[in-house]
Length: 121
Image (cartoon, rainbow, N blue to C red; front, side, top):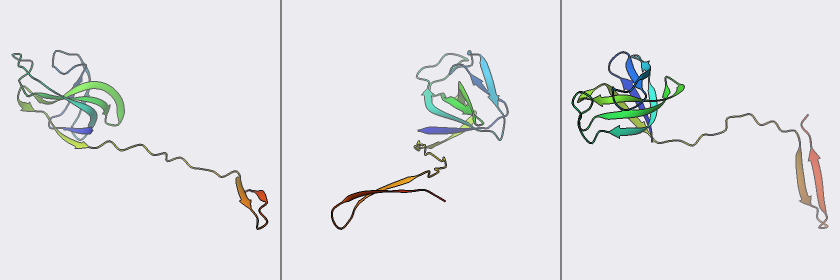
């Protein structure tokens, strides 16, 4: 699953880990989006650092740029961002194919196997 995070506040911090004790490695301003692939949910509380149920997104794209860090969705019970999810779609090759030569193998009415090469003009 791919998650898209939209901040509710300006300058939402991207951190090395899923707590505020980890160093900041970037930020997200209003109007920008982050993408991630994993949501971490706090299973216990630590006064000032996290509450049970806090959620952080593992971010791998920050406004289209590849990154590696964590952003708070909910921290200490306060919602910092909204999340939407979408299934991962397989990448498709959007390259251009140029035909240099086509080779056709066929059999004539006498059963003889023939080859014909076609070249674009």
